[in-house]
Amino acid sequence: MEFFKQKVSYEGSESRNPYAFKHYNPDQKVAGKTMREWLPFSMSWWHTLSSGGRDPFGVETADRPWNGLDAMKASEMRVEAGFEFMEKLGVDYFCFHDRDVAPEAKTLKESNSNLDHIVDIIAEKMKATNKKLLWGTACLFTNPIYMHGASTSPYADVFAMACAQTKKALDVTHKLGGLSYVFWGGREGYETLLNTNMKKEQDNLAYFLKMAVEYKEKIGFKGKFLIEPKPKEPTKHQYDFDVASCLEFLRKYNLEKHFAINVEVNHATLAGHTVHHEINFARINDMWGSMDINFGDALLGWDTDQFPTNIYDASLIMYELMKQGGFTNGGLNFDAKVRRPSFTMDDLLASYIAGMDTLAWGLKVASIMIEDGYFDKNIDSRYSSYNSGIGAKISSKQVSLESLEEYALTLESIKFESGRQEVLEAELNQFIWKATK
Ligand SMILES: [Mn+2]
Image (cartoon, rainbow, N blue to C red; front, side, top):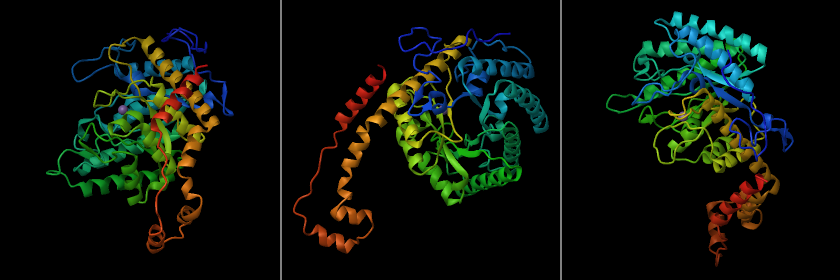
C-alpha cells in the first residue's frame, strides 16, 4: 500500500509546486555544513500519525487509511505510513510517546506487551531505512489516573504508575537508540492551593527525575535527558513554566548536569516570551538541547501547534542555532498538527514541506546575518564602555561600591547612544529579502 503520492524534491524558490521544496535543498552547504546537518528534522508520531483532528467541539475529521481498524492493526499501519512519510520527505528522525505508537490496554502489563510488539516492528523499519529516534517519552497525561498529576499526584499509587510507565518508555527509547528522552510535565501543576501541597509535589517531581537519572545510568542509556517547559494548559500553574523556572528547579535539586531544555515555540509564547528569548536564555546557560518546532496564533491564547510558516521568527531561531553551532543530541521536532479542515493525507505532506522550507529559508537568512556581522557589531559597540576605563575595571571585577561612589561623584555627564530598535528591525527585513535572491 502506498500512503503518500510522491517523493519530495527540491525545485528552487521559483517553483509553485506545493509538493516540492523551494528552499530546503538537503545537500546545499550553508556555513560549512549541509542543510540536512543543520536541520535535523523530526516527525512527531502523535500529531502526524495518531491524532485525527479531534477538538473540544467535535470528533476526528482526518481521512486516514487506518480509520476504523482494530487498534493494534491501526498501529501497525501507522508504522508503515510513518516510515514511508519520512522516506518521501527526507526527514531523518522521529519522536514518540509510548501511547502514540501502541494502544494502551486495561493493565500496564498488557500495555507494555502492545508497546513491545510495535517497537519490534519499528526497530526493523529503522534498520531498513536508516531513520533514527530523536527522542522518546511517556504519555503521563491522557489516562484518567493522571487527572491530579503524575509524579506530582497526591496519590502514591499514581506516582508508582508514572514511574513504572517511565521505566518502560526509557527501556524502549534505549533499545531504539534514542538521542534523547523528554520529560514534559503535562499534568504536573495545580489549579488551587486550597487542595495542593506545592512543596510535597515539587519534591516528588524532583525525586521522580532523580530516579530516572539513576535508572538511565544503570541501563547505560547515553542519550540526553530533556525537560520541556510549558506555562499553562492543562493546569493553571504548571511547575515547568518556562526555561528560567525549569533551570531554577533543576539547580535547586542538583539535577542540572543531567538535563538540557527542549524549547517549544508555542510554549514560549504562551509564557509571554518570544521564542528568541527562551532559546537565547537556554543557550547562554549551556542548556539548549532540542527544539519542538511549531508556531502559535498571535490572537489565540492556547497551544495551537501550527506548522511554522513565519519567516521572521524562523530566521531568529536559526540565528540562535547557528550561534550554538547546531545541536548535538537534539533536533527540530515538528510538534505541529494540520488544521482540522486540512484533513487529507496530502495535507500532511504539504504542511511538513511548508515547515521545512520556512526553516531552510530562515537558515539562509541567519547565515547572511552572521556572515555580515551587523547585529554582533551593533551589540559589541553598545557595550563598549565596559572595554576601557572604569568599565574595564567593572568587567574585571576590581571595583567596590565605595570606589564606584568616588568615581560617580566626579561624573559631570553620562554619554548615551540611541538604541536604534527600528533601524535594527528594518535591517532584519533586509536580510530576509537578501536571502530570497
Ligand atoms: Mn504545543
